[in-house]
Image (cartoon, rainbow, N blue to C red; front, top):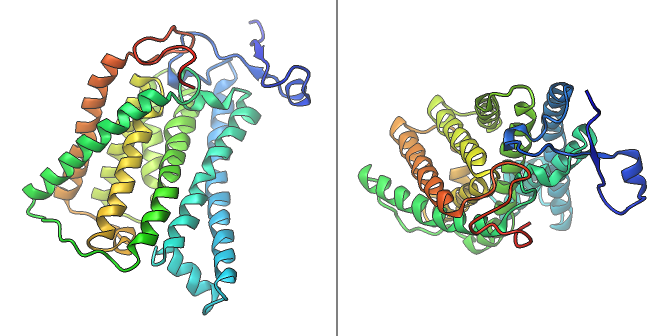
Length: 331
């Protein structure tokens, strides 16, 4: 079999290109098949999954720890660092959101390194088959998520007899600034890692797209730590539906939109009622709460797929784009 073609990664003659030439992704590949570039792609995919998980559990908490240490020093070392760090992790202070969520945001450069160093594929393919994030479809899906997910949330709360009680927590303004600055990054980074890189790396192990969809959703749910079965099921369902959207839309745009809306509004509503630290401490939900959450994700998925039929986004590599996704307009 002929050796895979390579593509330049930057300026002609650069040392990076000479030392680590990039593999050209074959035309006609679905999102889950982007990393199936040669017969050895499966082994690289398995290695990438292991390295990605190790990087996640090592570097994201280290960055959060370093930011917390800097905060403790900058605020005059109140109490012990251990007490301050524990308080930040519980989101009892706005900077806890900043430290924790910027730690998770580190997944974006981690994925870029894995794509280049392990697979020798342009990191932009993690975002879509285009490659790159397609901003106009993303903004459309963001609008869809804002409307559908909030509508289902309010309707389900009314059906379950859970009226919204307006009791803003002290210092909510600081939390609002922290979440608007870092929560979208955190949500996008999780999509890039779980529905972008892991879905593609696991997809290189099997031609059956459902292998990557289910496996990436399982890892996503497990990485949320201690939780009861219903909360785990809710998160697993979100992972599956978000991955399905990635496959049928050809990129992360819809998944990122849903994840950003879900997380931002969860924090906003908590900050205006029960408190953000209380939301962070949730380890279990009731069966009805889990069903309501899954219904919210499912309604968004159905509407997003209907909208995607109008947008006609590119779903395979090398295809001519159509609809709102026109060449040279979205990267």
